[in-house]
Structures are given as structure tokens and as C-alpha cells.
Amino acid sequence: MTVLDIETPHGPARAHVTRVRGAVGAIVLGHGAGGGVAAPDLVAAAEEAQAARFSVALVEQPYRVAGRRSPAPSPQLDAAWIAAVAHLRAKAIKGVPMVCGGRSSGARVACRTAADTGAVAVLCLAFPLHPPGRPAVTRQDELDAVTVPVLIVQGTSDPFGMPEPGPSRTVVTVAGNHGLRSGLDAVRTAVREWLPQVL
Image (cartoon, rainbow, N blue to C red):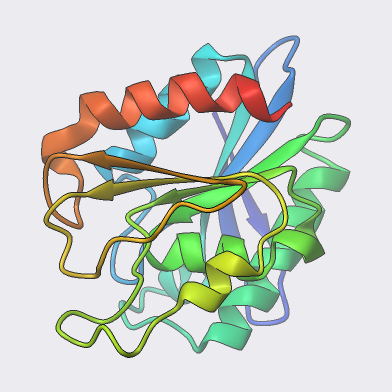
């Protein structure tokens, strides 16, 4: 694994890059609002991607690199993510199709920026469809705006809601809540079966 600090408009991001020899693609994943890139579901997805011959980059947003737990505003998250993905595409994992994604907040960022990053598909782990107890405050538009294939892996008891499938959007439900910790085997299976289909 190589750790890269990447300059963005909002401070340095950090990418943990694992290159796979003879890679058929790459996947770039972001973390949740208050968590990091060591979240169990992110690690599980990354391991399955490597087994499928995808190089992997786990990206820490600048606010996390700076030691803050409270996330930056959405426009800053998106701009930093776009800059980090562009850097990775130009240098560390160039020349292959790129899937973008993440867990929770990171999934939202990947959806909002899918067109800007040139993602061929988006992987969403625990997409936060709405704040807990506030289903009227929906983020469905962020999902609907994505024009490439999307996989959402969602816990059956996630208080952030259950997204609906769509024409190019697959929703896989697994046991557990927003952390997906009790459904890691199912997370692995979902990623393993979906990734080869997007190339």
C-alpha cells in the first residue's frame, strides 16, 4: 500500500492506494461523516475489489486529515473529492475504468460527483437517504441524478432509510443497521457479484 497526500482546494486529502498487477479497473472509496477509511464495510469492499483485480484507493477527506470529526460542507467535500480522484486518475491508478463510491456521506459525495469524476459506476455502502426520523428530508435526487450503474448495500434496520431500486440502480439489503457490521459477508458477496458487471 502507498499513502499519498493530495492537494485539494480545501487542504490535503490522503489516499491509501493498493495497486493490483494487471488491474482491469480501479475503485476509489470515501468514508462516512464521522468515521475513517478503516470502517469494516469499506475494508470488506476494498478486499473484494482487489480479488476482482481492481486497484483500490481509500480517500480521507481534508477535514479528517486535519484531525476534525465534524464534516466540511457538501460543496467542499465534493470539490476535494473531485480533485483527489483527478489526481489518482492522472498518476497513481491511470489507464483503467474507475468506479467511485463510499459509505454514508462518502456515498453521497460519490453520487453527486459521478459525472465530474468520470466514474463508470458508483458503489454506495449505507446510503443515508434521509436523516433519522425525518423521511421528508430525502436525498433521493442525489441517487436519481446518477446516470451510470449504482449498487447500494443497505442494512434492513438502517435508521437513515431504504433507497428504492431504479433502472440502473441495484439495492441489496443485508442484516443490520447503518454500520453494516453484522452483514459483512453479504456486503462482500454483493460487491463480488456486481463489480465485474460494470466494466
